[in-house]
Length: 221
Ligand SMILES: NC(=O)c1ccc[n+]([C@@H]2O[C@H](COP(=O)([O-])OP(=O)(O)OC[C@H]3O[C@@H](n4cnc5c(N)ncnc54)[C@H](OP(=O)(O)O)[C@@H]3O)[C@@H](O)[C@H]2O)c1
Image (cartoon, rainbow, N blue to C red; front, side, top):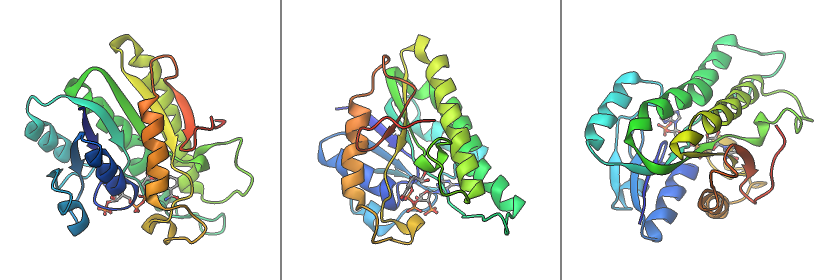
């Protein structure tokens, strides 16, 4: 049994990660800004009031964790505001940068002392953060923030190797969640999460720093 800590676990992919990991007997610490009835029904440890953009939240979380060591940190929380070229909205782009790229990096950095020896970190990024894969344009803030998250993940994989900490950068697929307006073109969270967990299980120091699709494909930067 390992201890997993998941951000943004009250709904969508984060909630399903918490459910599947609990179901296979892992110790799960679900963090969220505010909880949900679905999350409460899992009967796992829930840390509420955890906004990843807030330094105070992270201090509170670290205090509540006390001497608990986390084996797998899954940074899942994120937002998408689809800025088009004709409606760039710089404030929205900055906000997505803060939530999707800068805060995940700062969150991980501040959690390092709470990670166990040989811990794993999974950053939930997006294929929309792949420059090579971008054939449809648009979504400036989301794409730019997820590219930055991919880069943060790669640097973390290099910097944390000497501490035996491996880092995966993961794309969940197109998933039917609130973020995608519960699109009927997407897969269900349970299918995506099966793949995400498999990728995390297979993460080692040797393949650390790779950008994977939940289905196992290696994605181009
Ligand atoms: N769905 C897809 O097709 C898809 C594809 C590629 C990548 N992703 C990535 O997968 C991750 C999960 O997305 P999802 O589809 O499950 O979306 P979702 O249903 O919209 O869930 C987003 C989660 O992030 C949390 N969150 C947002 N801002 C936060 C903040 N400042 N602090 C803490 N938590 C925050 C939300 O909490 P609140 O309830 O408090 O807002 C919610 O729990 C995201 O990183 C997303 O970019 C999703």
